[in-house]
Length: 423
Image 1 (cartoon, rainbow, N blue to C red):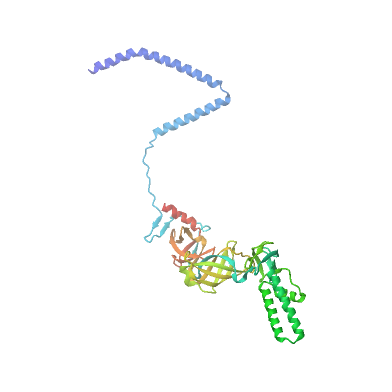
Image 2: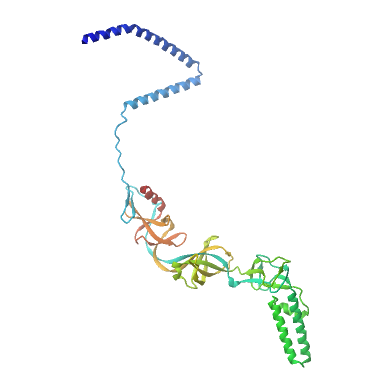
């Protein structure tokens, strides 16, 4: 049976041989023609383009060799991947400890300091604003109906005691002057006769009452003496400043009609200011009149101002739940302005704390952390409590034991390692 199958295959091969020879001859001629055509195209190119073709051929050859070698090489070999152990350890208390094996921190960037307890002031923060001292401020108002004839001092003008501010035409003022002149002349006549002592006394009383009426309208003692010496009435009433300060606000214009009680201008002393702050309920017990307060304003971040509490409100504001505290400020250098926002520190006592620079504190939302050295290559991040002593230092009241090595500089950089390990 086997011999019959082999004989049959041999017969098929003999029959197919002529066709295969013919196809092979045809393919050879076609390949030779294609090669000749390709060679002709190549040599018809410019030398620059022939160079580019050669480079492309070399690149194709290199790529082909790489593919072949990749096929021959066993790319499915097993790769051993070791799971790296995290260097971060979480203690039962929640404290994070980071181990940096074989890593030495650059001492120029990472600086440690010893934790030492010292006495620091315990302060509470009071926020508020500045205002004019109401005890050193005055409102200049019309004391009789009239008309504004002239304004001597406009907004911001400096005034002294007795400086003219507003001039008014007032019929009532003219009437009061005439009454004063009449009583003065009557008193002089009675004095010359020396026979009517009772009438003289009444005349003097009437003269004094007329003088007081002129004063109540706003005239000064100098104006009354001028009326008596000249024997003539003044045409207009000059309203004068009762204090040394500035015109804070002018409420009338020249030619305006005013009634009794209308405000003409507001005067104040800019060198005597008040700080009006709000203290929250938990800090009420620390307040006492006369306490010293250290103020800071945004206009002068590096300067401090001293104020002394002179008033503590007897009632809590039902909306803010805060207590108003007022303090006197001596603005002798004229740096402060009313309605400036200010924050005050009120020292309530002394306490033990560890003082570190602000660069040692890591602030994450409402939390405060520091990093301490717990071993040669290990570090712990501790949650601490405390408060800012100033813009450069922070007082730690809880969270760090004395003698610990606190990272004073570079804490933010090392904390990035903690954050990466946590991820």
